[in-house]
Length: 465
Image (cartoon, one colour):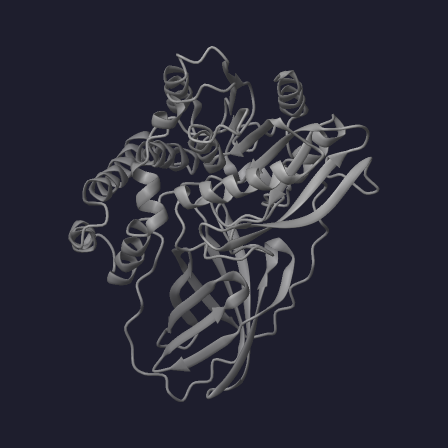
């Protein structure tokens, strides 16, 4: 299981994603053993968690259930309770939690940190909580072996940053060499299938492409699943070097037509693909799926407005929320890594929310990935591209809004005669056929990726010389 995260590419408003720690007396004699239930608010959905604590106050043990992901018994590697504060760490998820016990001993108010800091309260349960596995959602597009192609688990190294990417390569049967593509995931720590909300978009995409004669390489993000490296400190530019390591690996495979190696990136991957192609002549073509065309600060501001409206906020309130977020974003872009940034964010939010919530916002706004993403203008790489480009965006995408990004992409690619930019009617950020486009729909929709999009990508890739 990969780390808890917002759906792929979900550059969601973070300023309020922490909580005030309740004030109270020490709880030195209280044993926090028992079952505790909480929910992470990811902005677009909630992830329900159950914390099982056993043992005496000085020798606690714990496991965590991620109910919505059917992942139970995740080992907690270290846990301690002292002076009313509970701290635990889960190495597998690169995650930590710090919470303060309420005066009545029934609530832990705290922050769950996994790349970004999110508010998380746990409520004590009087009875043991048994997390029952729910039937897996119906995902009719997920391929089932045996496959009509070769599937191999492989690995390759990014020597520049000393990480090893664990991956799967799928090779069409028949006589090669074949055109090849590297799939690049969206934001958040993703596995090679880009697993989220019960869907495996990259598994479905790689299966479709390989069945149509295209070799596909897809990898776990650095520091995720079976790949090594530090995900938490990496920026989009760092992930671009991982993609280049994938290209270098493809060039070593005898089944690959080295003159027809391309990149297919989704969401943040759609930012990385042109970044790599602009400087690497080994990239013959790219496909951008919901890639951005404007700086991240603008994407987040627009996304904040759309999500607030989707959650039912009146228009005036939604605009006010977006304006407040935009002020913080502009501040982060202006000051970047300045030592003053944390103090200025604190001053901006002081009085609007508790200190612990402000601290969580500061941690997010000063993180390397966030600062890079806010400032980076993808149009700079798009203008340099000479290779063929296919840029697709769903008309109902709330996370990378087409009305904001597609005009900018078209403008940046205006000098490229081999570029095609299309808005796909009725599709959301994951390229599912959707009613509203709200991220709340992702898990409810059986379709993982529109057959229209799958076919369009395959046909376009096979046409590239």
